[in-house]
Length: 134
Image 1 (tube, helix red, strand yellow):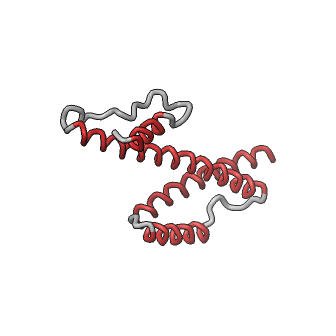
Image 2 (cartoon, rainbow, N blue to C red):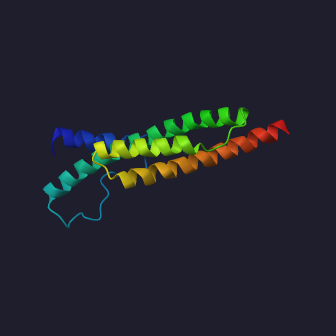
Image 3 (cartoon, rainbow, N blue to C red):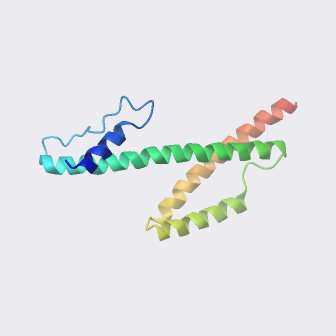
């Protein structure tokens, strides 16, 4: 295995405080493929693991920002959803996906899921804020 492949696998093992139970070398394919193929597979999977960890931390940051938006909306009694903003974001994300050679329909489904979670959080923040005012 090259130094780069080894580093990728080692990086994937250090995903954070709760990654101790994760085995980046776990596979049902051991003994089914040549060792060189297995090594290459594990190296690529190490990169995928790093990307997944980055996605989780980016989503956490995004949700921290949307929580701030939710509090602002609650204080000013604004609706949890903003259909105009949501439609613009979906259009924007579809264009970005096309530019990145990612299926725009997948990108739209992904953003719709995130938007539904954000709205759910905003509604909960609004209810909590209203209860404090009562």
